[in-house]
Length: 293
Image (cartoon, rainbow, N blue to C red; front, side, top):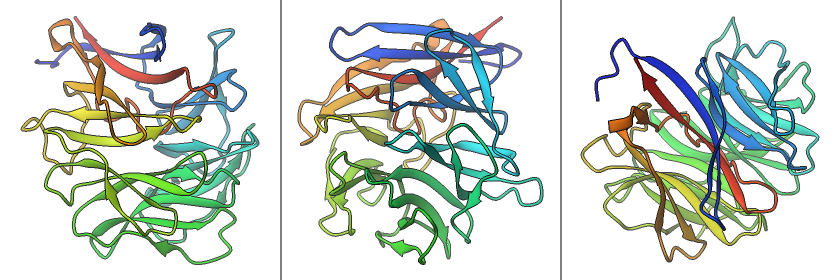
């Protein structure tokens, strides 16, 4: 699909896993990415043009969440389970490299957590005590954890060569889901929260990114790129993708959504980088990109 000279719209949507209903919430003229669902179910949080926004599900209105010096927020942001704060990945005007920060849910001046860069936040433990993130240290991207208050050095959990990304806690806090290229293709993996028992969970002919487990712990949704369309360790924007779901034990992998390039619809980077499940585990939010003349 040639998207040259076409106008791009960001399409914010939800999918009901019980009924199969795909609902468009709003089409944005600007580029938006990576919705989170609030703990009370009332709003979504997304990033756009370096900032974080709140989308009210009742009114359909978006409002800026101030993040102080963090003027280069990217699509790796997660909300705390108690709804009081969020962790973001962002750079500043002075230093554009991504680091992990925390900020009150209503906005405010952020607190820098990771001293090293680049670092990309993907998970907060259910009790709010620990952050999980992907980071490049000495030329290799691995999964790390650190106390949410930054009170202790980071702990490296993965050591495999190649990219390990997208670490996200299970609702019980005992496991971390992530994706890894170590088997050749990008696949979903799970490990205990201390980094032991690293177990591959998907095995098919696809490059599977960002496994997001539902709040009830029963299902996992993820983004799949087609083999040959992208390098296994790459997750670019504007590609033909599928959003798929499986049981938490890795069984019953099914395709829920497939983009339709013939209709100008693409996805990938920005579609679902962080957990976007509704608190009742019945729906999740995502973004596709529509290209029109």
